[in-house]
Length: 324
Image (cartoon, helix red, strand yellow):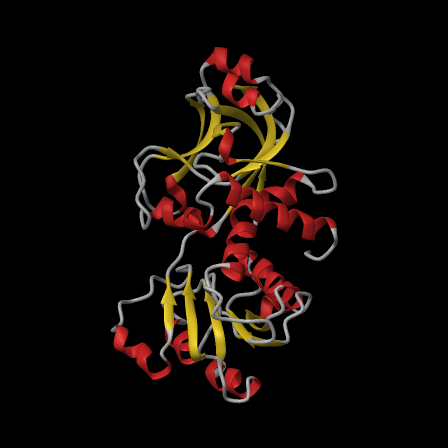
């Protein structure tokens, strides 16, 4: 997680609203990093019924943002980048006020358009930030934290139980740093993979076994051919394999992930850091009667109750010092 800090935004929402423009990082044509450009005259978001305006202090920069910017996950153009932010409530609709939301409340959220001074957010998407949790940390909870939460609590469909093995790729990265710790809190035994450059971070996460890999120069993922991961997994698990594999790497790890599964284990593919997972015949899973799922966060936060329930557990772990 990298943050854009918008604490310099000192004007009130209503002052800026009268000027009808704000500063934002905008994509008008999909492409590489140069497609994301800072504009100083982007239209100010409108306060809608049932919503609020958040004055952003932090914006989370997540890997999925590059999928939108490149066009891998298509969006209507132009659009403001980002989908994770944190700040204070600057304006409140009557409907949101009736729910007890007030101007000045510290909140975090996940909606499109967080790379901006102000963002319009439905009240149902707001997460009140409790005392004892920093706004920067709370902001990182919304995409990475909630993703790690559903991956370790729900996406595996209870096919893994306490005391069983879970393989998590890329535990040196943002989401899977959280996932490794949450898997341990769930009682799973964890094998993590990471690059040599991130091994110092990975060693602090409590993994039962850490497989350290060479780095790929200029890439955002490790060299998954530098170590025979499957052989190491089978050695660690006494030949049984892992009941769940959490894989945000994609193309470079799909074979490793499937071959590391235990009997009736589940391959959870949630990201494409090395490229999209290519199509493969479902018959390939027959050897171990294995399962595969390709989940997304929105399907695991389908209503406010589920969103708040997940966030509350994460915030509780943070306040108790169980996550770092």
